[in-house]
Image (cartoon, rainbow, N blue to C red; front, top):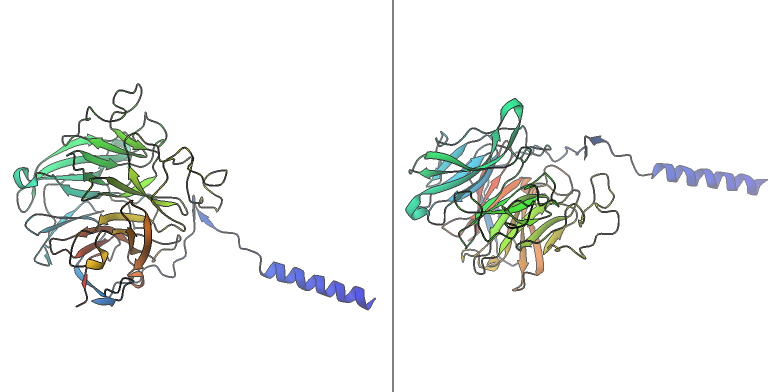
Length: 406
């Protein structure tokens, strides 16, 4: 009888422990897990901040300017810096001072609420100069174009820079309806304009969503694109099978095109983009869906698809990307620098990362930086001083400069 009683008490204790340590049900807001807010809204201090780094090189991070929702940075040959925002504005920074009034001459666009919420990659998204800018003064802009009945989609335009404003803005490419979200652009060493898109059907060559596009500088289709003679295919497509691509960079020596894209809950990638190649989304991914299971029904595999060069699990919401080529920060020369909007689905965990790669583009090591500042790093650029400049895309956003500490 006593043995039976003791066994019953033991079983009851075990059940209590199991109940106490059972995993929680996760609340959802639409398709996304409801994010914790404990690290969200931490304001950026005054700085500067000094950090040791893994390569034995101390860095100083300081504030160049403060503004709401900066999305992208572009340095001009005279050293002036232009930044675009999600509110559809362009600001000019000269000699460390930002002009109070936005630059005139840009197109209308769509603003979509606070950073970090689903579907808030809108407004002015990216800005780059033409390879022959010294002669033609052309700037290229991706933006969310408002359409009738509250609809919108991504568009690309260009305008002439007169030293203080945009002139003669013209739209050169209007994506199909529903194609909104992030749109990074970069000119390759071949003089062609490369564009990232999201949405649509990434596996369908009849849709330009989930692709890297390749265009002439006037928005027309190059005759040597991989699918230009494929029946039913969009001639603009250069590669396909991509998710939300927030970073695009050209290797300064080889001219190779590199793209990064966000997975769902994990599976962020850096890809070497090759013409006509399928990168697998949504058929394969090295990430999990937001509820938890793997994105694919089976274990992740890239047997018939191009695998990534670098990937993240958990996700960091990888964004702007740069190959660092300067001498001011010599321990980072040749490395990839990427922005991060948040880590592990937790707001307030943005930062930037440095990935060392070898001559075969294989990862050697990586490092997370400025994590204590809690900033959503949307873009990463090298200035003419060879320092690193970061755009932090949030309401109390800023342009940050990274330079040697001594």
